[in-house]
Image (tube, rainbow, N blue to C red; front, side):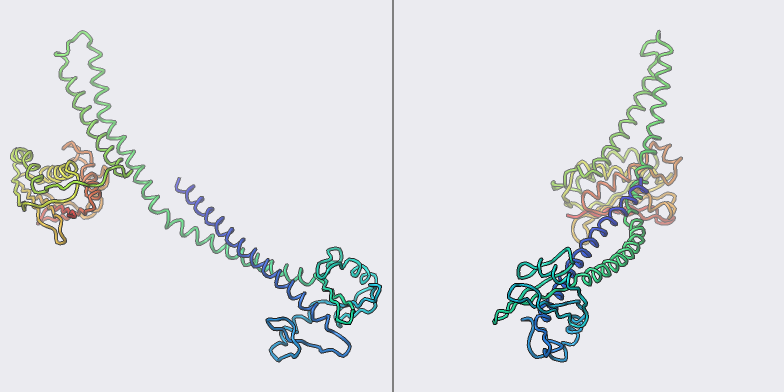
Length: 419
């Protein structure tokens, strides 16, 4: 899938860049075509002023052709002199009387007659002869027509098009290489998310497989003794109930994470007394800690409130407490503290003794189904979703959660929530 997505990414970029280059080059071609046509018109206007004693160069300003040339106009005059232009002076019957080629044009009488016959109007194009024309009538009634060969326009324009195509091909090739590099960088988050999703589905399937196997096995035992009463088969029924309960808890956890990923959880909109919430959350864990020989300490500052959802914050506290008591070790200690944050809000810390978490596992602790110690996690009934849910809850409350672990100081979870 990622490979297909990368191909689509590159293809989309190339199509967009090709479209932009096509529009830009098209605009340049049209602009140059108009410029070349204007040069031909200017050359024809200049040719209409030619005479045997007339000037051999002209000055061109914003208002058109002027009388006195200047040194800076030599470049313009040079370009105009390159345009193949000839003029025809008509007699009173409208027939060609005199042809002037300007020294760079040779034209036959037949072509002149055809050009004059088709030159109707003040200005236009004769496609059959590939000529432009410009007609002018002098104050004394003399009519002259200037003709310019369009072949030079076409050759110049095709030369520009060839240059544009070469530049465009080089640009597309360079952008193709850049797109390949960018696609790897741009799709890296999607690739990581896809890999996490694939691993998530595989882990969820694996976790559901065990209770389903137990349920099917126990169901088979029940069906193999149809004559027994429910009381006689109570043990197998209880096994089925326990595994079904574990499956329900797993499915509920998965649904919670799915709703969080989809952004369907409503934003926190309640004022929650976090101090009271933590006191009530500690009570159920006191007998659990006592049975496991774990000393449970607390230091909770009163009157601290945050904006959030009470049920989720209670679940957050339960997850952190359960995790701390579970891994505190024999004769271990768990300390829960709640203080006001440096920038307002609240800071919750849960520290437990016990074996330190290796550094290479710390950055993965909040990933779904991740276990630093598979055997201990499975024996304690965990799925590896608790800390992932805790992080989702903290994120939805616009807070942060971090973990530190060492042999001497133990494992410390720190949650900071805004006010």
